[in-house]
Length: 317
Image 1 (cartoon, one colour):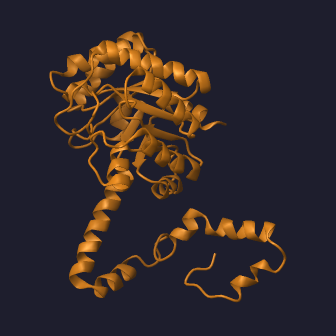
Image 2: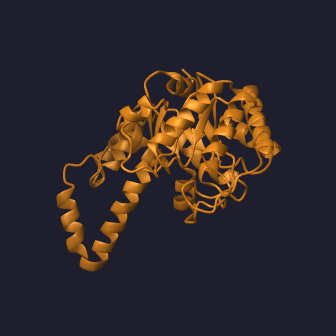
Image 3: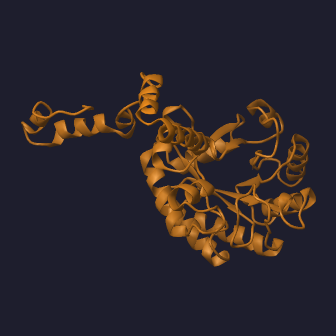
């Protein structure tokens, strides 16, 4: 089954899809190893990890496609990706969506912010006019239909927490994106409460009873459970920073400890993680060194694998 078809099935099925986010191919392999059904590439995570800059419109289409292509190639799961604002007007969006399809991505969300945009949970956001946004989503839908109708195009509205916005404006836009652009799914960014999530879902259902709905829930405390989100009518439980936020905190803490205590911090880390699947050189298993050796056995000349007996290494596949 094509990855686009599989992602579409996951969005439209009755059971909620749990979608964790990553910023690189190694983390995506971890998502797959953990047993999730799909993977997300974060635009913010890509900006932070690839460029070391804020998620404020600095990452180009080429840089996003490069990272998305690496991730999509590294996993068997369908990849759902951030596509920011589409990197320009409706014509740029048309081109960008086709490039995401060609990169092996199974779906994207496209937001209605102005360019340069900013991270969805950072103050100072603005949105483009409703008319311009509808035109961009119509262009995106036409672009993906030309190459792969199953590619999932999600219209994200940031109007709830944007300047001069609010829940009513987010609802108005979400309804228009369903009714006028016929997008595959709708994404409500910036929901501050379970109650507003419920109001948004009910309003969208008034114009489209079947369209999948997802939401950013980082402003809701405590976080809703997966069961709560499904009961509210959401198709996706979305955690865009799941992999890299945990990795960032762990790396920060270890590096500060290593700077303060030196090799003793390394020794204690090795003891604490002994037996972990990724401890030491265990990551080599995850990224495919054993499969590489199997291909050597299959394709290289007789005697080529004697190198393993004639050499030494901390890790042997």
